[in-house]
Image (cartoon, rainbow, N blue to C red; front, side, top):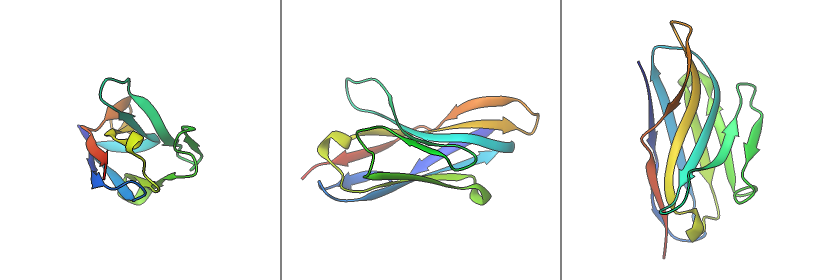
Length: 120
């Protein structure tokens, strides 16, 4: 079994910062790409940022220059540093990871999400 658990969400004023964390645990052989998605009310889930096993990153145009994705392979954790937050960044943020289990099957896993609200 594999679990992804997000943390770090909350309420922040416009212009503020938050750091999200997502820790993977369980029967893990290796973690390939990791990513953060978000879903605002009434909108489709969208990719925010992704990072490969070799630390190649990709960002949505709307967050480029404000958000930074990183990972700590020793801790099986991915982070999302969010700076200069805007009200339109308000959403539930989901962690995603492509994980090869100890039985050598590869699956796409999702966390349960963490709420980020940007409001004055």
